Every structure is written in C-alpha cells, then in structure tokens.
Length: 354
Image 1: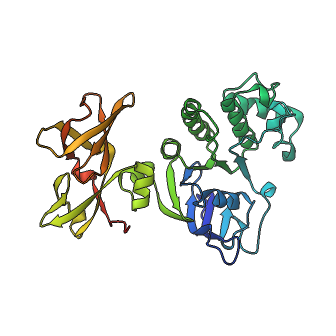
Image 2 (image 1 turned 90 degrees about the horizontal axis):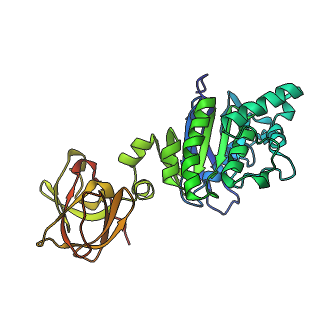
Image 3 (image 1 turned 180 degrees about the horizontal axis):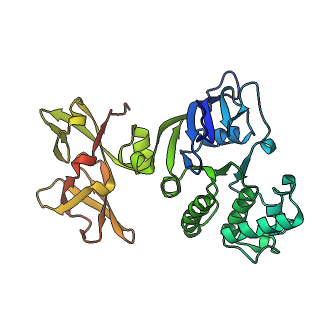
C-alpha cells in the first residue's frame, strides 16, 4: 500500500541472471520514509549491490516491483532508465570527470534541470558549502585527496535535489582515518538536506554509525531489518550475530534450569527455556574476567586497542573465545581467569552442523 509518507517501495524484488543459476536477489521487500537512511549490509556476493542497481535502474528485476515517489519505475515488464528516475548515485571509485573542474563536475547533473547560469552557480555554491569545500570549485579531481573527491561525488549527486540518493560502498577506497571522519560527515550532510538515502556497505561499523535502519543481507535475502540498536542487541539469526557483532558462540546444553558450557553454568532466561542444546552467543564486551588459579580458561593473548583490551582466551577443549574489557582490567598472558557473562544479553542459536 503506497502512501504519501513513503518515498520508495520495494515489493518482492528478485534477480536471476540465468535460468539455471541461483537468484542473486531473492524476494526482497522494504519501504523507505522521507529523510530515512537505510543501510544494506552484508559480505561480498550477498546481492546488496545488485539490489541497489535495480533501484537505480541499471538492472531489471526478474520479478517484483519498485515504486519511487508513487510511480512504478521497475518490474519484469517495465524499466524506467536511470536518468528518468529522480535519484542520485555515489560510486565506490568517485566516478568524477577528470577533465572537468569541481564546479563543472557538480553542474553535470544540473544541466538537465533547465536552470539558468545564475541558478546553477548558486546551487554549486550551496552544495560546496554543505560538503565543506567552498573555494575549491576551480580545482580538478586529481588536485584533491580521496576524501575530498568522495565529498565532491556526494555533492554532484545532491545538487539536483533527488528524491533518493544511492551510495555504493562510498568509503571503501579511503584510508581508515578518512573513513571514520567521512562516516560522521555523510550522515550530517544527508540529515541536513533531508534526502532519503540507501547506503551499501560490507563494514558493520559504517552501517551502525551512518544508518537509521539496517537490512543485513545474506545469499540474496534480507535476514533482518531494524534499527542499529535492534540488529546489534537482538540479532534474529546466527548469521546476523556473527556478521554484525562478531560474538562468541559457545556450545551449551540444558540441565534443569541451567545452561551448561565448558566455561561455566548460567541460569536460563524465559526466552531460552525451550532450548535443549545449541550455541550460546556472547558478545565480547559482555564478558568480564577475574584472575583465579583454579579456573580452566587461560589468557593466550592480549591486544591493546586504545580505549580497551581485547583478550584471546583458551578454553579447556582447546577452543578460543574473545573478550573486550576496559583498561581497568589488566591481566597478563598466561593468567587463569574466571568468566562472568551479562546473562540478559546472551542468546541461544541452533548449533551449526559440521
């Protein structure tokens, strides 16, 4: 059901490149409200870029429909070309024109908008101010850093004021420090303009930092769609838990009201009471450590991460689990430790058959 408060409606979209192959995108549905930033998060080959390309108009769906601003723009029998959709695109490799200066790169998308020269210059000045590069309009792309080039690519997509902006791994070619800074800037810029956006990434930290909602994709399907907080704290599947939280999975068996693991026993919560055995998911930051000479878990490595330590722990069976602690916990490699788990955060998932 399409309403005025929905910019984009994706309804049971699928893409299959050949009859004898698996679907690259498999029955995906979601909708976007005005001003919302949606992240499509997943590993390489999960279908997120193909899904974005269908929304942009570069690929035609095998089945399903895409409705943008109330108009159906794609189905198995209809494909409105990219230039006729009210969308902007930001690519991984910036895709700026090397022979055009920054002002002309930004003006490229404005030339079809029937604006006069004064209006075009005004809009260029507005977006350059928005991205913090005012005064650089006469420079050429090769005279800018990678982060500046990506901001120009964002400005070029924003200049025509599209209904929807699509960002395909826009930060993956940049250095870590630049990426962290641009993460914050991109969210600020998009929120300042109020433009709806879809942000494709394989980096969970980027998705958590930038997006209002995240769709975690695996094998062509959206495994979970929700706020960053919901995805992180209550993953709906083992895949989401592994990909987004990098949690530990510890074999567990039920005995009465207890879950028994090789690192200790925990009381069952009401949500776990149907489980007889499985893997207990415990996030690294939910484990606290205490030195204990009688314990069976040993610290095999410690990494200093600036604001915290990451401990690698060897369990009695020879397995490894990881814990992140504040700098107040300072334990040496080789120390035997007792583990405490914030039990409310632990979840049980079915064991993976090997």
